[in-house]
Image 1 (cartoon, rainbow, N blue to C red):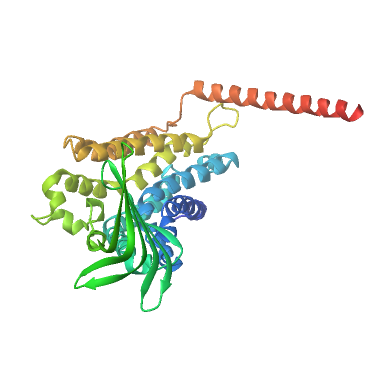
Image 2 (image 1 turned 45 degrees about the horizontal axis):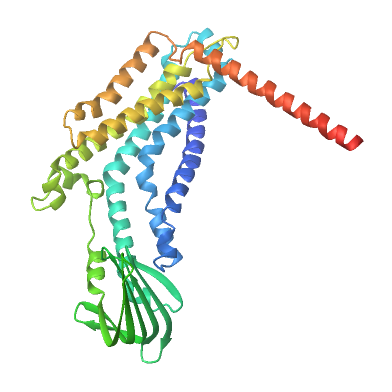
Length: 399
């Protein structure tokens, strides 16, 4: 590899790693915040929460890597063009392959990483994540004995324990049950305990009342000496781990079990997930080619055009949206499978044509003029507003 190629690779790789880390951090934070209820609602420790948060990273790497790459390549080449380095390389008689080869090597490494994570690491991370969430929901015994807490056990079912009494007894039991359509049930018992009968768990409530209120406003009150509230249904439901096609390994998707309920209902979902995994890795190469087609040539600073980074990201977002759209339709409409593979192939072919013919892939010039004029109007308006506020403040101080 030539010195110039190593120089381009070093600069692009540094920007790629920086963009990847920051993009991963932002996306990871948004995903983690959506799972904060694992601690607040389930009473789990912070260690379980961070373990679940760490398992999210493999699921976002295949999506984030291509965008980090297009940012790195477009930004690196744009800065090199601003510093006249691309013009010097062209004037020295270097072929365009000098710029293309280091970028493609980085893109190839990113594609291998995406393929390995998508087909190797991510399915196991998803399965482990579901196991942790299921085990946290199944731990109802430790959940309900926390005194003074109001916990959601299931949709429409809430439970609160007032205090813990000696001999593992519970005091001040309150249960609100609105799962039955057309009626709201409220249970209150002075004491109780959790009784295990084999694999079943029953909440025995003693000396209490049941308030039943219907939609028409009718209210009935029933007193009881003892009442058994079955918790085993929630335990078994929490222990059952439902694995979706995204959670399955690639080996399983290639040969699913015949008694798989999801496969029996939606066999196309497994084929669509498999096609997405076998095509998603290619977007790193596609986005690298798009960035090369947009910013890989030396351009004059006087030309009015949208910044290459904005152009590259806009085109990459449109291409990726087409890929997501096709993947979302492929499980129901098999013809969209051709589009799943066709989107990256066609986008690559168009970008390669721009590179080979020494053309620049860019948004229409009218868009650049409109954006420039719009930015100018915003700047002039902001300057006039500041001047007006300054004059008003000055006149007020003088008064």
